[in-house]
Length: 265
Ligand code: PGA
Image (cartoon, rainbow, N blue to C red; front, side):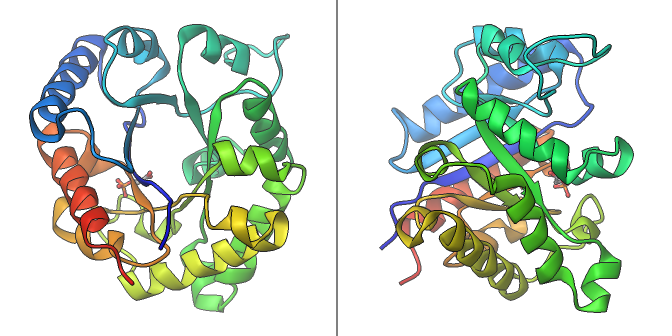
């Protein structure tokens, strides 16, 4: 039986002004206090606001972790417009989403930069949530697995096993399923998650691969979450659109709780 947590994460992307962020964090905190009490063993909730709402979100001391959505790899320097790991630590965030496909696609984030970002996050005690995932072209060409494996190996090859065991999250997000309403079938997602775990085993050893949570992302909603989260190697969800409202995000947290309570054999 797995000891991995179930991780339900909200990626707000470029949404919400500060007042909206305050209200969301307060409402989700209330919902969690009411519904989950002192917390559910093994269930972790993460919210990734925009940079402008990070500090106040942390200051609300919510019962969930606050992550950033991106980070520069350098401690400091002449990188106009960027925010580095020391700054995120200073604000009090606990982790950072790295390599989201929108960062790779629109901001030319490379595998090389990501390898440095993962290392920088770990060096500053920020938990990296590394996103990987193929495009529709790669899926149609039959190269999805090789593509995802390459993304993983290039971002993680310099990471030591201890750090991976204690800090790393991976999120598999097929690009063709992000924001499109099209979700990978649970079987297809499970197959890729199993491949991801085998790559993690090759990099860090089988025991540590069993400890790293691998989340699925791409049009997760309350209606499809339970089936996805019940797959053996799916340890959580990274949610965009359906995480923008507390009502629907809390439905996905609830699905995570149910999947934890009835784990697959
Ligand atoms: P989506 O986004 O849930 O809106 O598909 C997921 C993500 O990009 O993290």
